[in-house]
Length: 91
Image (cartoon, rainbow, N blue to C red):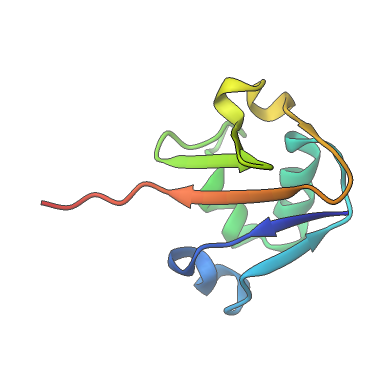
């Protein structure tokens, strides 16, 4: 089981929950597929209509940027922590 850490900016999509236990493992794609079933509003904030990671969302598996380790095919071991960090714009 992996744990998805949800930042405060996205917790409205999870009824305020900041840690989600996800049974899927293997790849980040499998984890996010389960998220899409269980928390569809959150999933739409992470992936676009084609199922790819949104440009402005950074995802880390055990502290490693998934864009550097295989994208959606990044390995997700048992008990992994997955952080979702949306970019924040300001000016």
